[in-house]
Length: 108
Image 1 (cartoon, rainbow, N blue to C red):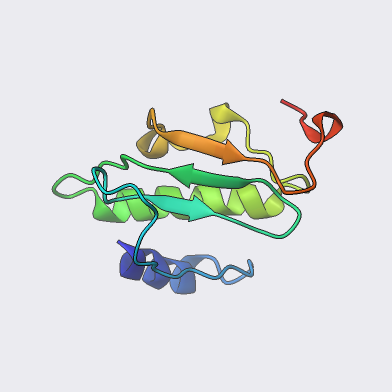
Image 2: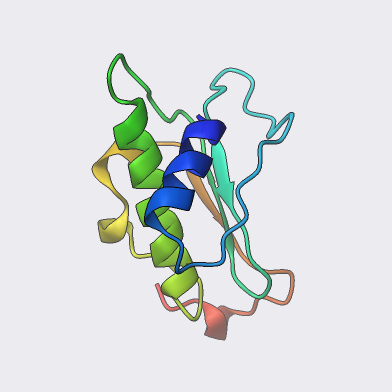
């Protein structure tokens, strides 16, 4: 999955500065297809239980890039739930505030 997202990124999203890398563990062992979005000064997102079925790998990879673009384009890093691509709307999504979070930063 990570390799497919990297390949799509290089062909479709050259205008964004995005680092895509695989990691050994996100502690989502029961749901191994997971991803995280992180940036300095923005909340982090962890998505677990991302479902990849036969023939949907490219679609899921494209959805991950769409979500990444929303995240990068947002000054605050907050992504309204309505902007999550359908293939990534899982019941296991966490929005983790920045370490300097205060309630005034939360515009949801």
